[in-house]
Amino acid sequence: MKLGARILKTGIAIVLSLFLAQLLHSPSPVFAGIAAIFAIQPTIYRSYLTIIEQIQGNIIGALLAVIFVLLLGNHIIVIGLAAIIVIIINLKLKLDNTIGLSLVTLISIMETQSGNFIQFAGIRFSTIMIGVFSAFIVNLVFLPPRYENKLYFKIVDTTEEIIKWIRLSTRHDYDHQLLKTDIKKFKESINTMDQFYKMLKEERYYLKRNLPEKSRKLVIYRQLNLTAKKALDTLKRLHRYENELLHIPEQFKQSIQEQVDSLIYHHEQVLLRFIGKIPTPPPYHEDNEYLNKQELFDFFLAHQREYSDQNNSHLYHTMQIVASIIDYGEQVEHLDTLITSFHSYHHNEISIEEDGDE
Image (cartoon, rainbow, N blue to C red):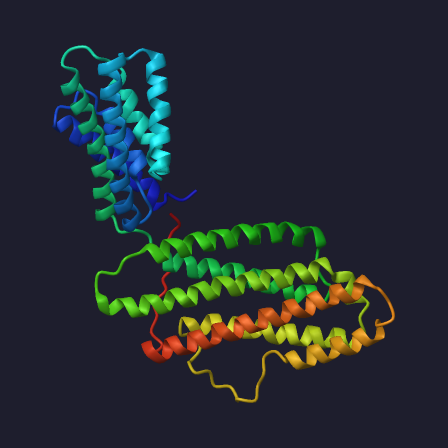
């Protein structure tokens, strides 16, 4: 298990919040530590949004706590009723993420009404805000993980594994149960890629000259994700309809294998061109086609004529395989176009360095 950035930041935020609470002689510094846990976020932008929401949520919790204690006291039933109202208000204001900390604020203030209650409520509220601001400071000081690196390597690793299975599937040379297990893993990897993309999209650049490059990169990474999904969809079709592949004419079967091999080779080359390991534009002849869609379609039409007099599901399944391959090929071609355009603006310069997981 790796010690990720978020784990480290959480620990530091707790230490900082407890230290500041003790430094300011707060009677209950533990509430600052609890608040810091709620406020830690993976990106600076999310941290900024969180601190705004947490301030609003804490104010709601503190105000309702004071109102209920002054009007109805702090009986446990009253605390439960106040908690329900706090949750309803937060949901109405679309502050779902602040419900937990709002309730912590509410309960911490309503636990007693001895002495000067208003002063006590102010101290508890301030202590919790110390934790929120401590987490924000830690998020600012500690640079967030480079989500571009994480996203790129996740895409490459997942795509390479999918491509290996596609290559084996067209040759009917694989372990069915193992592939079924790996397809589930690929789905999880795709979800992780989507999360990393969201994180990358939320990263902020403070120099305007960097904004056009970031915008173009986001378009490419979105297409990289989509192309990986299409590759997975093709793999699933080849796996699901393997029996149909075994019963198509040998020439049609050979064409599918050759076209898929050409397509996945193109996909691999595009991934390498993105980080400059292959020159852009690529030194290929213009008449070289990676995927001959017309050939695949012609073979399918000829195969269809053979089954025209039969109501056979084989034909519909074969159509799904061909359609999936063609769709995958079009996404790779579009990705190629985007990467070529990107490097024409940015002179083939892109920096990707592997780092640890969060």
